[in-house]
Image 1: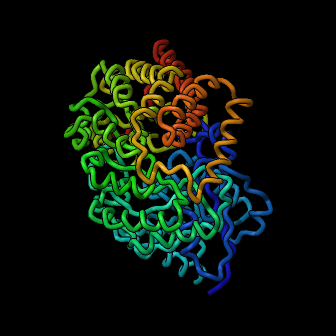
Image 2: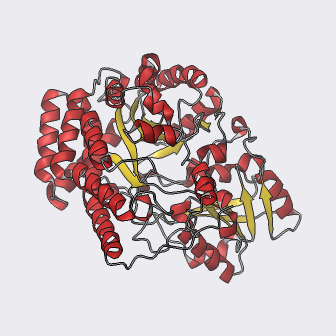
Image 3: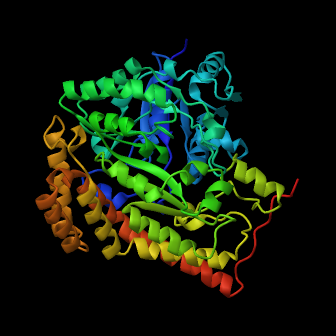
Length: 533
């Protein structure tokens, strides 16, 4: 087996993105929210005698010295990274360095990456070994495609966490499972990873946390699962062991994840998550309109009162971040009022509201193409990084309602829910509702010094550097300190996020206003459409 220098390059995310909260990162002394878990997992699968370096273009630069060292570049990512990924390919090939591209965007849209020397498509556990063998045999181009949904995640190695600079990130990601049992029309997760969630073993997962602990990491660990509770039986067997591990180590990590709303139905599961140290969960709510939820195959959200379900999660000391979407065919002209009212009633400060976007390789995209409504460039990322995600570059299809009406409704939601008064009011409401009497409400633990460092940097920043919301923030901090002290840590996180979300919401509104003006002046042209089948 020949030695090889592999340069892993994680492309930049577009700057105009809801999730690219650089201002918040700066306040707590970090450079970016999270590192490239996929790439450092691939790194662990490479031969032992291959040398590996990592360049995250969200936290650092790709230098000439890096390129001069590399025998091979491995890169890839998601749709909002597409433009930079293509730029990395061009730059490497100008130097004669073979480029290997994988990841979800390449798997969904391989035609976009035809310039790459190698495409490694699908889950790495199912195909990377074949690629390595071909490379060692002298191949310098080719396509390797894993069989769908067959990768054995219990064979996945501990990611190369040692390649990371922990101080660069707000949180570190781990993955317990892949897949989701639901069939949401607009989601590509079931197309990429299937409807039968596959989980790692308990020992395997704890070994990953052991490795992070041994490397000295303390703080926020995000379980990046598409739906942590997709396999309830397995996760209920895992969480007690995770809770015992946390207790034995004096709670070095505070955890977040993503789950479906039916989490609220299971008090025992919520208690297990509380005992294990979970403090937040992202939930895709999408719409309060039952007709929309049924049409988009998200019927699970119609079987319960959404606001009450969110409040049940607060009862476990876990705060909710949620996703909402404007632009569904079935929505009414009351959508702005309905979504805004639900966000306020449920008291969800961080409500990621975007325009519907037809992702490559989804049921929605196939339906729109069949109906002759899908834009021909629907799967191409906008290289202009001002238009970074579905908040400003959605609706890549012909809409049922007039496009300008949808944009106006979307703008109203953003205007309302991200006004300082509304946002900080919801944070104070959440602070009064969070029941922090479990392990996730612990103030002192092994991660205490890490917390103190970040909190000190945050308080210094909001008091002396970015003072825009100083009085609203201090008012919320003091009220929480005197009424629900153990909720102070999650409240500080929500407050820090507004340093990004406040300006970002105004950026979104300005971009949407421009689009509305173009439509009203007749300057917006309908893009070419995919030919109907």
